Length: 94
Image (cartoon, rainbow, N blue to C red; front, side):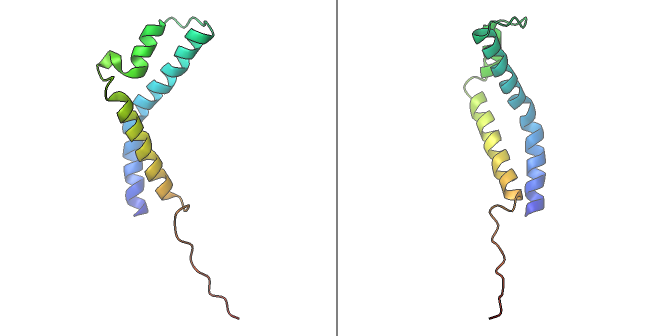
């Protein structure tokens, strides 16, 4: 079972990597441009269009896909840890 989750986790990580990285980087860049008045060479509007997926006409589904990708990574990642496995019962001789 652990091997199957590793396979899914690896594939999901590759698929979700670019959209999540784009969301994180554009979110940080938007904050720098808006709050700190840093000139990055991009307008705030363009950064927000990239951040929300509006530039790709995916603004309705882009956040949902990012969220589902993260939830999938969390589930497969946590399943590979021993956090939720039953502990073996020790037999103590009295």
